[in-house]
Image 1: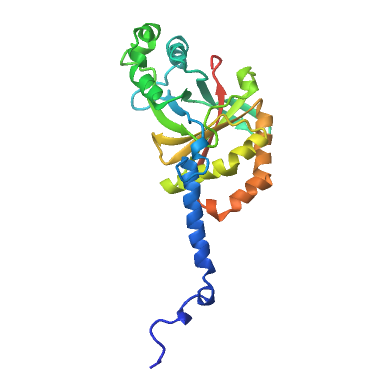
Image 2: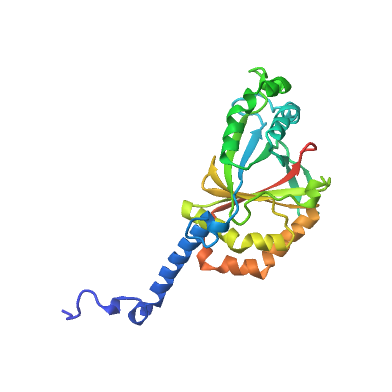
Length: 299
C-alpha cells in the first residue's frame, strides 16, 4: 500500500498548490457584488446614499383587451379610452400627478424602420408617483370619487356580460438611484407624431442577481444610454406584481429609425462591452422582453 496520506496537496488543482490568488479573486468578486448591491439599493453602505435625491414610484398597468376567460369577444378600446380621457387622467391631474403615459404596442421591422399596430395589443398605463402614499391613495380611492364615477360611468357601470377588459395587471416600481426621476425628452413633450418608445423587462433567476443588474445600470449603463441619445424615460425596480424578480425601463426616440440606430451604437460601444465582460455582472439576466410602444393621441 502507498504511504501517501488519503488527502494531500497533490489532490488539488495546480493553481491551488502554490497560489491563493483564485480564492482571493473569488472573495473579491463576492465583496464587489455586495458593494454593487448596496449601491443599487442606495443603502448606508453606498457612498452616495446621503446625497441621493428622493426616488419616485411608478405604477405600471396593463389593460388586457383580448378575449379569454372573462371576455367572449375582444373588448373595444374605445370604452377604456373614454374612461381614461374623461375620468382617470383628469382625476390624476387634479391630484397633482402629471406625465401619465398611455401606450399600445407595435410590431416593427428594424431593417426597414417601419411599424404597424400590434394585433390584440393591451393598453399600457404608466403613472408616476412622488411618494408611496400617492400610489396607495390613487389605487384605493380614485374610482370612489363621485366625479370619476359620473365621468366614467359607461366604463365603471359596464354590464357583466360585456366587460371592458379581460384582466388588469399592475406593477409597483421604485425608481433607480441612478435615475431617480422620470425624464421626458423634448420630442415627447412636444408630442412629435413619429416618436417611439421601447419598454424592456429584465428578469433574473434570483433576487440578488436582479439587484446586481440594477447596480450595473447605476454604475454606468444609464450614463452610456444618455450619452448616446437613447433618451431613457425611467428605470424601475419591480417591488410587486407578476414575474418577479425583474426590473423595467423605457428608452425612446423621435422616430423608429433613429431609435434603432441608437441601440446599434449602444451594442458596440466599448464602455458597454467592458461592463458586459466584467465578471462582477455575470449571469444577472435570465430573460429580456422588449415591447415597442406608441402613445395614445391623448397621452
